[in-house]
Image (cartoon, each protein chain N blue to C red):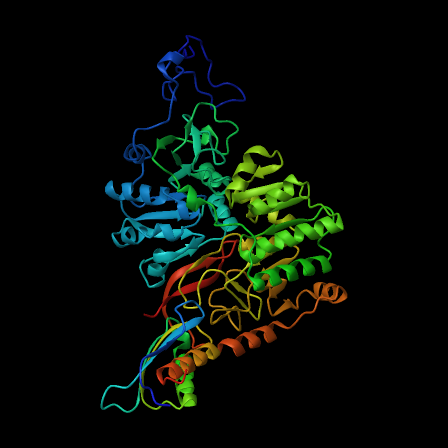
Length: 91
Length: 511
């Protein structure tokens, strides 16, 4: 899936995550990931869930910002997939 | 010849049977002279012009202990006002013994830094002060007491307040004070009553000075030294514990229904029983369901204890509950009732919960419903530190009622956001698992294996139960296994059990 514009999904409510996906900077070809996770106990889980969802969406190159508000993995997956689809103009 | 006393009587000393007797030396030889004035010249008064004068007259010095109560909760205006005046007076190294502290007390952080406050005793700690203490603000660890444990320490001398600064919504010029009248009405003064009894000097602060006599009074004039009128002792909007309307959260409603079903199956809901319920959403909903069940069963409770809410007041006024023992009124309706209902009794913290007395009211409880931040598979309960290890709660009457009640029920949603409530090991133990009988969550009810009688009763009543280990596993399946919270070795908090022994310590969190 090719990211062509800015796509967003999610909110900053508790139990949710706000995800922004943008095209990569010129010259960059990988995933540039920035995560704000208030609960340090789950930082690795959030990172893993985000990367898994990006892989599932087939996104190889993008800038991704995640502002986690203690969301469960299933919520993070849903928000990342939705943001990718919007950023790829699939929906 | 025997000496003459001051009214020219010959007193032949020593007197047989009263060998230490001293001759009379004049009416004011031993006490300050009482001004003899007609009423037109005004009544004798303990009212002073300023807080500064009261601090001076109280004899407060650096290094002493001062005490406060928390009946104004998040609306408290007293602690910050008094501490600022004490700082201005140049006093230092004080021990602050409060029945509880809340997020409104954030300004104390600066006074701890400046050395005005050296040490803190409290039941609860929240907000910026709690955050700063968890990160190592103070040299001496904060000591967390239960309500019963604090009253015990005050009565035994473990805490010796030199001066108690007690905010009261109304009092007269001689110190008869109460909490159910006045514009800052807070209801019961149950925690303050113990401080008034034991403190060397008692200073009342009030925004509701009344004509003498303000009777009946919760704090008697014989305990009071000075009175200071202030603009406000509490913000009425923040004194009440939020809205007490019925929750619409389906998880809380489910938990509440399960609690009442379990109480019923255990045979608790019968004529003459007693209960205490907290002010959390599930607890309040449980009171409402309990009321319906009591009407169906035609069962009348003998008394309800503890923090009193509008819900229990309604049951008193409907005749479903015979009496209310009120150590803390959670809302304005409870405060009103305390002033008008003959069977709504104000009780102090020692009557409520202190062990080692003739016996506190918690010992007569048939059931108590308590909330929790975390419960572990040994049934230990944490109500003081959050999932990040930072202090954000209160011990309160949790361990006191759990120990006293015949049936202790702890309620919690299985998972809050990404934090499990049922865990293999709680961060900080406040209430030991041996005093906890039943855990009710939205995903299942677990019985403490120590209570085989309860397990049988629930099975016979058709109440499904699960093992607590299964609840912990279910929670971890939803949230994932968290990385452990990192602490340093330094102790920032000491959690005392109600008997004064140390049940756990709180270590500084790593930045």
